Image 1 (spheres, rainbow, N blue to C red):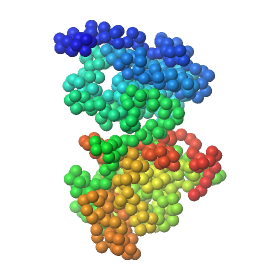
Image 2: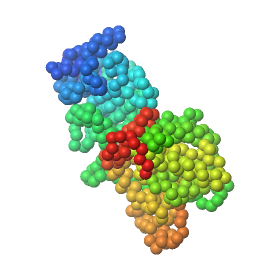
Image 3: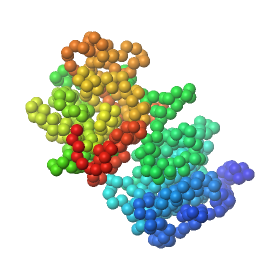
Image 4: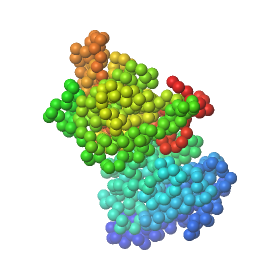
Length: 595
């Protein structure tokens, strides 16, 4: 009956009385409630919020503050109640639930939600604790609308204190009506039933994450939660396919409360979701030359000591004046051995990257950067890769280098050692290296050399570049030739970008349509016999931090921590601005171990 009345009121344009009546019928009690063992008690904030602060648990020494925004379908039985009771058993600073009606006016709902979050986060008892705002289903849409009105102070600007997580939220709207919200409609339901095109960005210092459930398309084929829709800059992950939208909320809050934030961030992305035939869809990383050229992107093979005069050059005139904040692309605490044999934070990479960005804005070359992956044993391998990269810079093929390699759990940092060797080699080549080196100080293996460097390129606003390695000394190029299409979905679990072969030799060239664009074509050297010749050439790949999947554009910045095995060895959720280093795996001290 209520739906019939709603349809009638939309037809005749007299909906305000219906919305007021429906709000009363759906939710006898709306607003903020504090959860307790015996149930919920409504709270008020007053002028200063002190009344709500009195409900916080001063005895919980380190528990976070939990703010839940449930679905409005039935506020008396929704999953927020189950999640709140589970959180209470974990000794939090407090658990609050926002109850609301979808028939209430949108702006007052957003104002009330933002007011409560801001007031509770500023309570003196929790001033130094993290705040988790977990919003379920339609509540996620409401929380996303309020994200731009949140004002949460943090002791360190680059360290987020408030974590806003939407769970199974129809962020694109239900698509039941064609019209999108214009600000004149009286109720939240009008926004939710239509198509939501975009959201205002959240305020600074807020970490945002969208967790998608299995999409439930509307009758007209509208997807309520496609990739690319939601808060700008938010990470997006898929919930396990076995998890329904209703039970997703308590599952997520339990994962967060148990300290498994990394596990939540590392849920399989679209590249691991099964297709209609039940087979896993593999990330398409490798592209052939003709695909890149057809897309209008430059694909030029570095050859010869001079760049031909008619070669189109990249220039940095359109790069923003200010470099990106390092926290957007570096997610670790880079460490090195100090003079006293103790682990110390490696800080100079920040200044190096700032100077390199300044010079890059006035640079001209065929490619803006060339990535040089590190090698843990140093010696001739690193020297060879660096020399090949420096020659590209000297001859004008690349404007700068990205030195990728690190180790946060020991004293040896690959990027620092590579920098020293690069300076030594550049001096012998009489090459001015000042402002021509970026440092990526975190990656410890080939697959994360690629991911972290492409993250940096995406943050810098670079659409393509080079990657330089070798195939006959360590065989690292063979990982790119034949392994990326398997490693990316298994280890990274997210779209990392695109890779294509440019030059070099390998034992297994591509021979048919099923071989990837990362493999070299067959030549006198690129075959099992020719690979044994003593001639040694660098292996160079075209790379881009951007990829497109089913019409959706993805950036390497979306690529999270990866598989549990990968994150256990190389954690990807550490704050780069924080002091202190991580100990060696299996040890609880901070002693320096040189490797």
